[in-house]
Length: 436
Ligand SMILES: C[S@@+](CC[C@H](N)C(=O)[O-])C[C@H]1O[C@@H](n2cnc3c(N)ncnc32)[C@H](O)[C@@H]1O
Ligand code: SF4
Image (cartoon, rainbow, N blue to C red; front, top):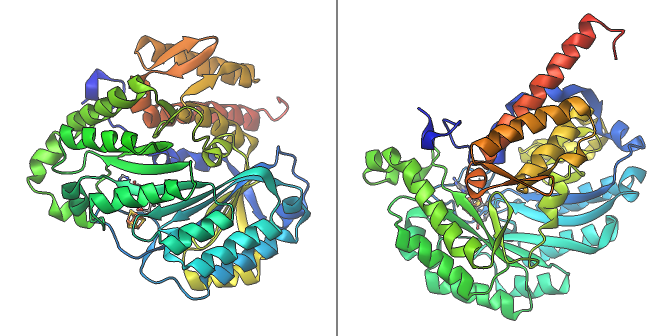
């Protein structure tokens, strides 16, 4: 069945959902040390990602890469060690890092001293740009006053706070700690401490949510004068606790898509038509308040230096992934040089950039030099224009609101078109190796 009389039968909700065919873009393997010893030319204005896979409370809906409760006592030291290891390579010393992102799990499950230690090591041993963005992801309850004060001293300049909803009913269903009043109080505290770039995560379409709940979330967000919010449509994982708790589950799942669309439109009507704009498919901001350099650089296909257990990275043309299992991660840090990574073809970088532009809701054809791929993209965009997903303005393709709603499905289709084209050209080359 086609949904919404569309070309798509499923709405992909996350950019993690469509990378399966990227396996065709792998063209070998390489050790990390070899990669870091080569002088790979790139803009080298990358980002640093630090994964803290712990949470002091497990929410009913979540299936992120994390463990419960107390972080291992040596976790911060392991990350510092990994930073120092990286620092011994010229490749890293010659790079510039424009954004640092602490994600998880919940980074603020580490105590003040541990977080401070990591922040200091990043500043001492990694080359950061002058206006480097430093983001801390946190829940409301793990963000204590003493951590806020330390973040201020250490130059943290951006927060991403997992609110999910202000509604006490919704917070209970999603398994979030702290009532609405406490959430509002903590967000005000962050602003009073001088942080202007505070963002929150909002989940919509949770069970028992109605239009008033969505409107209230947006009204409270606006009244707090925050920089922006991420909007995520709830993904119900069969194994998550929430799946067992849904009342009237048949009704929830049957009307899921219509409700999702209604809530999305309600959010758009109350923000985009009222002075806010999409920075990417799942991010609405006050113009110029949040530049979110971390995600912008990643969409530009710049390097991501991965720190911490379970962190994934992209260095030059290799994809690398630290072990999630802590013992294996410890061993990896001892002999980081031997870590085998996937080497990606130049096509991977190209597709990442095209998809990155669509994620940022605008695609400029002038950035595509290869005539064949350019034609492919143009044909696809023309189809999307006819179906109301895209508009052409000043030689750029802009996603419409409908296009943003279906953005991840569009990215998936675009990626598959380009990968197919690439594979065809590889086949031609292998049957006729003299053609280049
Ligand atoms: C890596 S989590 C970290 C946030 C932080 N641990 C917290 O919960 O306060 C980032 C965001 O992903 C979103 N998320 C996690 N699981 C989700 C799901 N099943 N469906 C939709 N969004 C989800 C939530 O909005 C969450 O805040
Ligand atoms: S939503 Fe955040 S706090 Fe809740 S379990 Fe997931 S990562 Fe942990």
